[in-house]
Image: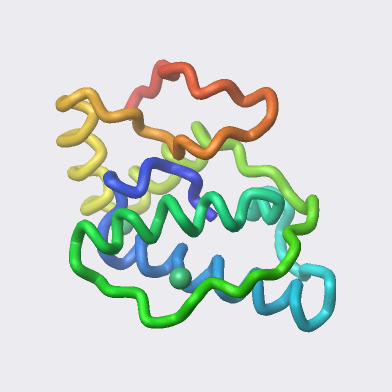
Amino acid sequence: MWMVNPRIMCRQHLLGEHRELHAIAGMIRKRGALTASREFVEARLMHERHAEIEIEMRRREYLPRVVFPSVDPIDFGSVDREASLRELTRRCPRCRARALYWLDRGEHPLSLVKAGDQVASMPAVGL
Ligand SMILES: [Zn+2]
Ligand SMILES: [Zn+2]
């Protein structure tokens, strides 16, 4: 889970996180637990994050065909959103270009799905 604003994600990363969310939900449903790295997952927010990703998918006309399972989220993992944004834009030139484009137009660079005390204030992000 990248937990950045879906608008800044390239097709590959957007669809990749979407697949990951379904995999997380599937694993929780089957086993009631997750085997994943805690710093890459925030399972507690999977429904909200999936909704946020799906809105962007529809906007781009990548039409989701599978309904997200109604499984109870578990409290597992926490993603450092700013570190995640830095890593994604370092690794992927397409996401980086989109991030610069949308930041220029006043979009918030991180996910708007709130995580407890990680307040959605505009962070000073050096891309
Ligand atoms: Zn989905
Ligand atoms: Zn990308």
